[in-house]
Length: 96
Image 1: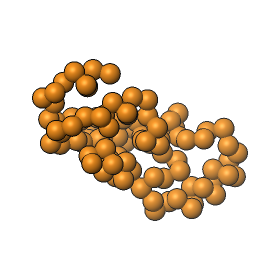
Image 2 (image 1 turned 45 degrees about the horizontal axis):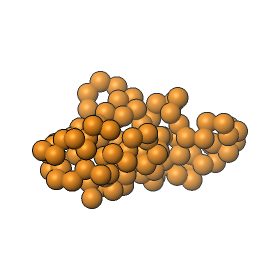
Image 3 (image 1 turned 135 degrees about the vertical axis):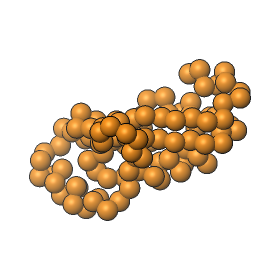
Image 4 (image 1 turned 180 degrees about the vertical axis):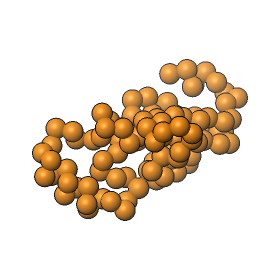
């Protein structure tokens, strides 16, 4: 909520758990349905077994930012170091 109070914010780096098991989308579905969806979305950026970045709580505040020069989003669940998130389309939408 405080992003609106930062008019000079130019660089933002987000660290999100995108591929962690507790954050997979629709975890209530059956294993068979998950496996079928996994195969169908295997090569897509918005893969079924990852978190939906467009529905993260508070993402609306980042969409409202103007004047950002750089926005980087990294996945914390891929181990040590900085690994970009898989869903580059969501990052592109945030940048625009």
